[in-house]
Image 1 (cartoon, helix red, strand yellow):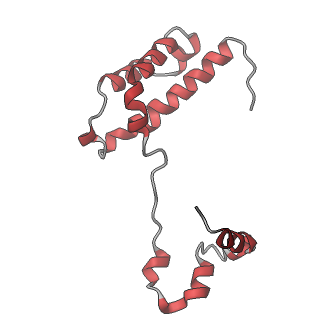
Image 2: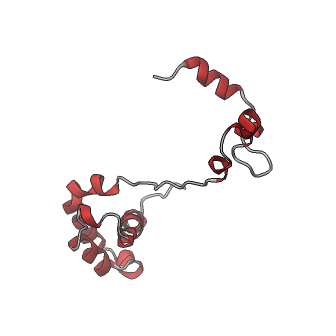
Image 3: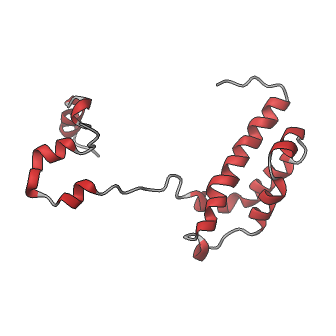
Length: 132
């Protein structure tokens, strides 16, 4: 549980103090100056959005396969999506050992986005209203 006082202080600081001249840690620099290593401020670590995709999808792999089968009954999906490639991805599901390899980008990006796009295309095909 967060300390309410800490949250109130953080929320009371004007937004412009968090970013100054393109420096995202300007406030930290003013507060700590040279007492902390410069590498700490210059580092730009990047995380991985949706890094738990494998854990979430592994139990539902058959649902993914069924979703692709539904897409194969859609004229729009057949025309716009590479369904054989998506099926091949599901057939060659990565093991834990392969999760760090670059090829998993096909799963995180191509497969997951294609499923979302397939659902959207099928909704459009059925004439359901699309709310943007």
